[in-house]
Image: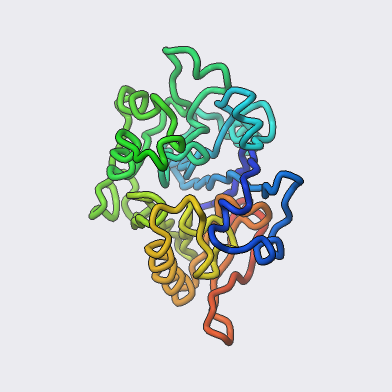
Length: 290
């Protein structure tokens, strides 16, 4: 089994929002910001190739937003960079068998949507036309009935399109695997960032990869007290991070990050003070065998 980190369109978001109640004097030590106080964020996907399956975890932000809104979120590029970068690996969107989404916020699911102004057409269809879409049922329901606090994070009409595809697989919170991906991918769930955030655990012969998604967007958020202002329940996020990081350190998992601007994956260790930190950091995965 081989794994590849695939970069999509990057975005720039407010550093204060990304680091919650941590002051700028602290977080600017970890990442530089622009004149608008925004920090660069990758929207990175994980491509897993087995003997007979092609699995894509996450689709990034894409470029579905109207230009004015795209500028507000600092989205780089005018095309669908994820699709272009998949093509560089010899993967056409029709080749993907499964698209596994951690959740349905636009910076993780936007890559399903055609490049603007394609979304303006009522008959638009999601990308990856031969893939089954694997999503947490709890998160799908949240996207159908969002809270006012996170309504803007979801893409209007996407859930309907996914249902109409007849290729939607909804995973229950007490369900650790699906028959299609048995022994390859298992699932675990957290709720601090958003209800029903689904983490994929990729089981290889030599390695295990944990897809951290927005529980741990990148290496700065490994530090337990550091959470995002976007998290629904920050204290729960911290508790959930502790559980995951303990496992990752004990089992030598490779953690995969969607938003770290420089690091695609790392291992986790505890330092002499008992704090978690990243080690063996990898800038990309390119045919990484597990």
